[in-house]
Image (cartoon, rainbow, N blue to C red; front, side, top):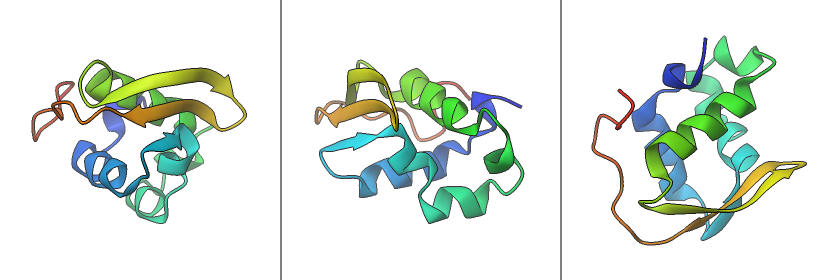
Amino acid sequence: MGPKDVIFQLLDATVEKMPQRFFTRDVSEHPDMVAAHPVLSKHSHYHAFVGRRLSMEYRGRALVEIKKKTSRGSLWEKTGGHRPPAGGAAG
């Protein structure tokens, strides 16, 4: 299990629902994400997997990582830049 097991289309839809600034756990704990990842969401590194996938897909495009290693994961800010391709850059 790892970041590529996070369903990109759902991640993208969840990021769209987030406010201008949000934490990794705001995404990983979102009910849609948990429901779509019933096994993965129970993994001890699930939140890290979501954070890594956010970084793989969005950093330098539509999100900027403002602060790392908070109690809720990284703090992200939407930049209005280009979103990743529909299938995700990481596959």
